[in-house]
Length: 146
Image (cartoon, rainbow, N blue to C red; front, side):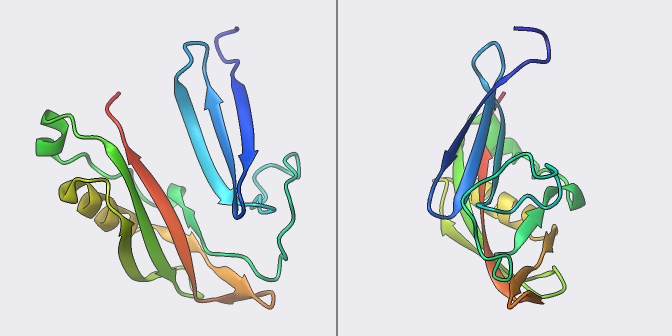
């Protein structure tokens, strides 16, 4: 493989299209979750998935608006890893109204660090009837040591 080539696999679940790419060393390099049928103008229609009603879309996190959560020092020293599943209630203006932990990573410090950091992100509001609306946004964050 060339230096910048990668192999991507796309799988669909009931709600999300998951894109996972691997480099030539067979390690994960990207993981993107977005609602099936939503491309946010990022792909210029290059990725087509099962359709959702565009008038009814969930809220989506905009990772460009916030920094990556900082790994808690004690957890990093202990080499703790895991995935935390969070839920954010996003207002029609894209701000977080409420945040909660749905599934723990198994390490409360990792869960709280992800919740605190990602709560400061902006979101693209969900839509209802084609208009921005307050909706829940599920977010998964994987803590890994590279």
